[in-house]
Image 1 (tube, rainbow, N blue to C red):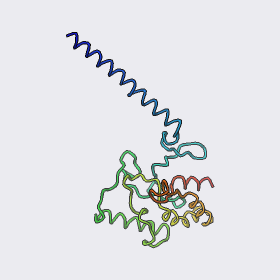
Image 2 (image 1 turned 180 degrees about the horizontal axis):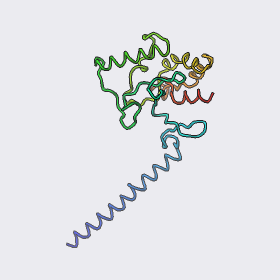
Image 3 (image 1 turned 135 degrees about the vertical axis):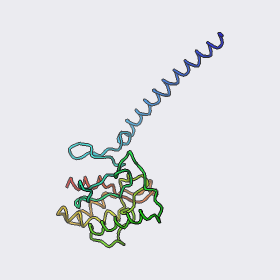
Image 4 (image 1 turned 120 degrees about the vertical axis):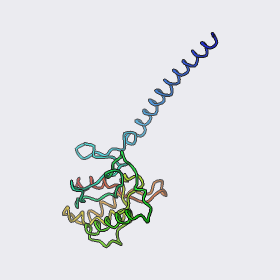
Amino acid sequence: MRTTLRTTGVAVRAMLVFTVVLGVGYMLLITAIGQLAFPAQANGSLIRSADGGIVGSSLIGQSFTDADGAPLPEYFQSRPSAAGDGFDAGASSGSNYGPENDDLIAAIGERQATIADLDGVAAGEIPADAVTASGSGLDPDISVAYALLQVDRVAEARDLDAAEVRDLVERSIRPRDLGFVGEPRVNVLELNLALDAR
């Protein structure tokens, strides 16, 4: 009986010590390292407007549409989203449709027609990322080709010179990660905020 009580006491004390050390101490240590070494990333890579208000995250896309869902011509448009009602971080996912799915083919055709009409281009000029959702449905970036395709429309809607808007896009291009991972891309929210700041 005495051995059982002693063993139980040791086990309870060990559990309490490890709970404090690993459950509390470790988390506090990791949080402190994150806040000191990578504060922006640790806090969600938040993007602030000129007045200091939080307008989004550089990691999560958002739509630039009116109340009816129509694209706002004065803003660069994001990739389509299949997450919930669009860019819903609580419902992050792709459509999981295969390339021969009738619903996906119809959605792509509809998106091509909308972009062709909005930007005044032929359907064949529209990059794939403009008409297909990403796997997460939350992609904050678009391809350089899709950003450049939208330059003339945005410039006209804002009464700006197209060369000035194109220059802003080119300065917003993020290179491949580590020089070889992924593709060059443009963060839509950051680009639109830079436009608003002009």
